[in-house]
Length: 396
Ligand SMILES: *Cc1c(COP(=O)(O)O)cnc(C)c1O
Image 1 (spheres, rainbow, N blue to C red):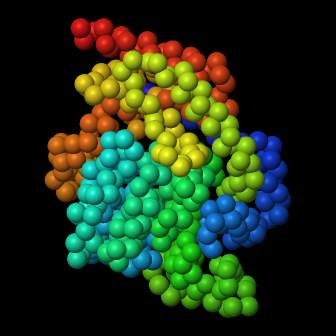
Image 2 (image 1 turned 45 degrees about the horizontal axis):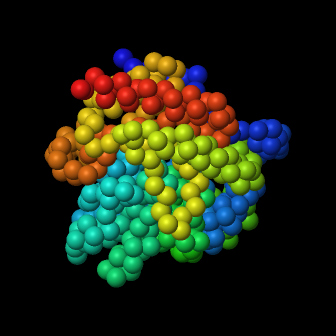
Image 3 (image 1 turned 180 degrees about the vertical axis):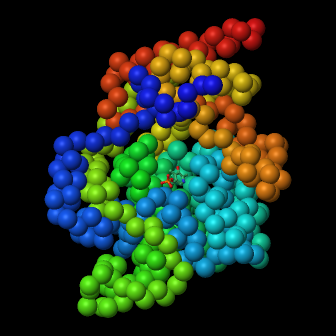
């Protein structure tokens, strides 16, 4: 058995950027005695709302929880359809299933790896309630087109921007294109809180609903959640079916520290991306990530693609070869519709979304994190190059 992608390699696939600044903030929380529903969550929310340029940010326990809350708050449910991409992490489509609605997949554009706007337009029908768009690997391409389609058909655009915090397109921040956006803070994202997520929106009602849903359906007073012992006296009043999707103060402290260092973290990621681009530019049979015109990327991962003609087996051997050299590598992302659960429950099969499948069979995520040294980047580049040419030779 190959080690899982989370196995610790000498050069890991990802590694969070945590400094003494985050440590100080966490200690501050631990010593305050206030470990949940407190000022750190509010600070984290405010920093995020300012960064994204939206009125509201609602912290929650994961990106997946955030997506679930947004689907719920929009009143999407059984009988409704939501158009989305099969080329994503499984959480984006699962959020549609959580509320009993039907994910309608459309194939992707082979250059940007995001859902093809023309196919979205064709998939809209009277049951369509929303487009759940994903910035695949943080690429913001087509978000403006999706927003136009949503407006034209009077449906909602939701952004699963879990991979795109800090990415801009034509001056607009990821998370600000749709009615709501959702970020995730798992340790491989641009910034982390260990586990965590954030809903961002300009819609006052949607924000209040999410604040209530994350807190067991309790009423919302002003901007904070009604806390035990507050004068509102509504702590045990539950107005709707809610969840416990709160983010702890400890996690929020890490988030505040990360947001305060955000520009530094993104600049470091940009440096690593630039060096990979230079190092891999001339490698035969390799397609590098594209950055759309007008975009500034914050770089979630660095995913390269083998040229058309390479098989999935060859790609898998290259990944295994990297791992054998103690370098993290992964097959981001297997198509959602081909996951065992989706095949079994919904009858999806190979060939349903040929572009997604062909791309997904040839992608390789290589180690990518802010503190990567030039030496490490060059070693990854060299190893990748050797593995690719080895496969090429074996074929001839
Ligand atoms: C990371 C991610 C999520 C959320 O993941 P959590 O682990 O629940 O925070 C959702 N969608 C996409 C596309 C992601 O990459």
